[in-house]
Amino acid sequence: MPSPSTPLLISGGTLIDGSGNAPIPGTDVLVDGDRIVAVGATGTLAEQVPAGTTVVDATGCTVMPGLIDAHCHSTFDDVQSNDELFFHRPPVAAALVTAFNLPKLLRAGVTSFFDPDTVHGIGPQVRDGLNAGLFEGPRMATGVQALLTSVGGTAGRLIPDEGEVGYAAVVNTMEEMVTTTRRQIKYGADWIKIHATGSIPTHMGELQVWTLDEMKAVCDTAHALGVPVTAHCRNATSTRDAAIAGVDLILHASFLDGEALEAVIASGAAVCPTFTFLANLADYGDAVGASNGMTSIFRGEIDATAAMLRTAYDEGVRLLCGSESGFALTPYGHWHARELEVFVDALGLSPLEAITCATRNNAFAMRMDGQLGVVAEGYRADVLVVDGDPLADIRIMQDKRRLKAVVSRSRSVDLTAPWPERGRIAGEKVGNWAAEVLTYDRAMQAVGRS
Ligand SMILES: [Zn+2]
Image (tube, rainbow, N blue to C red):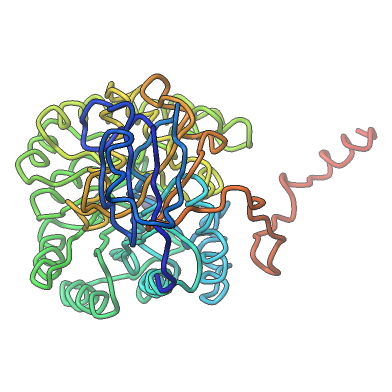
């Protein structure tokens, strides 16, 4: 960021450092110029505190690293349908609404996020704009567009047979897979994303739509250029093959079986299960007319996957916390910390372990291991002051009123400004003519002339 910040002393709080260490009461944290300069017992940093330092009183509060969201679609604009997402977000509109939405993440305590695939591939330009200080937002690591085979992804037949649409780039041959990977890296991809499973209308659940060899070709190409690969895998075989192919970060890993679990453990891949979308559908979908009585199915996917991922966690697999924010069921600034609650409830992690996943572990998705996600000397200056104890109730992390301070790149975020609100952009919504079909009998029934 171009403009200089003043030093901040966050004083007197209980420190949860993000590395899994037990909390330390009575801690001072000094930040300056996007670095954590010193951490020590309250009152012991006096000699290091420069004149003009702003003091944040954290007495009675928890001080912890800023949250990292390891799966956030920052360019989707809380869309209500795939139709809206793919056909009602032209490139400039997508960029404008992205810049409008990003401050909401900071307001929710998210100081970094990983966005695997972006509408029209604008991710690297958004990231570079953020880094240059064009608009306010967290740190960003980004993909360009997701690579899909012509079977498609989760948008079924909305995906064309070739070419690009929205966040998708269709790659039909091994040659196209390699070329598109190289091209995305040329245009600034921090990560390459493969959509390893997809849905077609005649099939229940998602099918594996990439072969092992195809995934391996992308991994080998990206790795040779120093770029890691992530893959959306919503069944067991795709999770297994992605791990064998060398995918670095597996998204979802739904319904993984023993074979897939073994492959993941052997490969050292990280897993970001992203239960939040399913959990919101299961628990709150009815409230917004979304779930159509499928609550138990979504809860079933969480439970089946969580049971296996608990074993993965115990075997040392790195689990990341991601919210899949960017959809109407996961709007920006509301659900980024929900995954921690699901990690506690469904995976049986302790709140401290869940926080470690969302901070130190998630630095992997930012490609900033050892630099981000821990409150310790030398780390980047992203710090939260939370009114309350998230170890007693992890759900308080979802309540923005509990955030007393959000420090992003050593600057305090203004938490008093009104929440960003906007009107509708012409043409951005998909309208239905009717919610049901108007037959003659239905009409007569409605007017009482049956
Ligand atoms: Zn996603």
